[in-house]
Length: 95
Ligand code: SF4
Image (tube, rainbow, N blue to C red; front, side, top):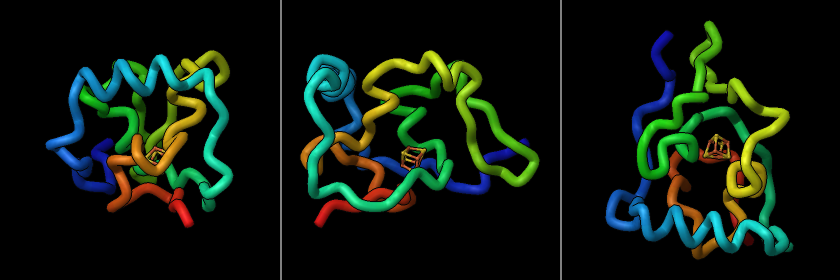
C-alpha cells in the first residue's frame, strides 16, 4: 500500500545531526505549547531515512510495527517547535 501523503519534511533540516539531537533530547519533556494529535502521515518515520518498522494500512495511513516498544524520540515527536520539521502534514502544531 502506498502512503496517501507525499514525502514531506523540511529537507534542509532533515539531517542525521538533527536526528541525533532529537534522540538525545528525547529524555526532556514535550513542549507545553504543542497541540493536536498524530494523524498517521508517517513523515516523522522518514527522518532522515525511512524506518524499517514503518508500515501502511489499507487506507494509506501509517503505523509502527513496533509501536508498543518504539523509541523515546518517536514517542515524543514533535517534542519542540525547533525540532519540528514535518509541519506540512503533521497533526501536531505549536502555539
Ligand atoms: S509527522 Fe506528526 S502526524 Fe505524521 S506520523 Fe509523525 S507525529 Fe504523526
